[in-house]
Length: 293
Ligand SMILES: Nc1ncnc2c1ncn2[C@@H]1O[C@H](COP(=O)(O)OP(=O)(O)O)[C@@H](O)[C@H]1O
Ligand SMILES: [Mg+2]
Image 1 (cartoon, helix red, strand yellow):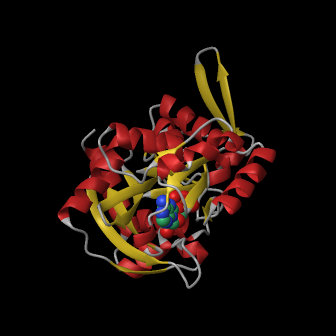
Image 2: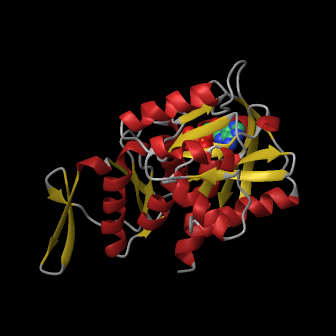
Image 3: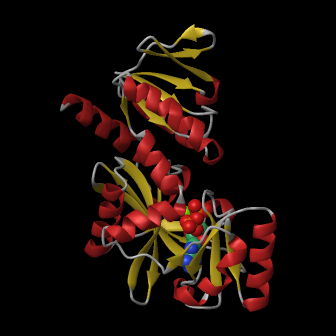
């Protein structure tokens, strides 16, 4: 197969591992910097220019779209889709999963449990909503962010109020979320490939931090999921119509809750801590998908 990995930097761990796994399995692979793609629609044709020439269509694309480039990245993916190319992440699924509140709406709409969450159109107006998600401490999240960078914990009314005023001043919308205190700075990252769990790890935040992201200094360890947790992660990925995704779970006293579904899950932490070859599972899944299409 001819595979393009859509990435800004082919040396990033996940992109390079996917390329390595695809080459190892005998495929022709090329990295395409999607931000350098020019999209042209003319007289019923759908062309893409790259490096000044029309880009030949591959059999498959594996999008690794950066968090800051969702909108343009989705347009590039859609161009490939319109040319009949199989994409591991559809433009639609990318857009849905990247907006944290939209993602929660879809999950709850399909009966998947999440922490209590709320949203209104201006951060400054959302103070009365804090009581609706369980009071203090409370979590605020930017709608689109990754690696824990847009997630804020406000301990009390004074901090919450000033944080919301600052977000409002910046014209930035945030969602409000119940703080799951008993998860004690730990979460579970589950990787689902083709409707099956292929790896899972528990991540623990460093001292003095509530965010367990590896990029925030979190440390992982292999984790054995309960059957119900596996089922929950698989269903969450199905709801978002993703073929491959990373699901983050918090273990609350009332059971597991989904906090997000990530359409470009990082592979470094999960491969290191679970000792599973996630990249190879992804390529094998694509092979089966194409063979059966
Ligand atoms: N409601 C919550 N209660 C407790 N901890 C949370 C909550 N939401 C997020 N966290 C912590 O913050 C981390 C980052 O949150 P997440 O929603 O996954 O955003 P990101 O996309 O930046 O990873 C989580 O991995 C978890 O450790
Ligand atoms: Mg996360």
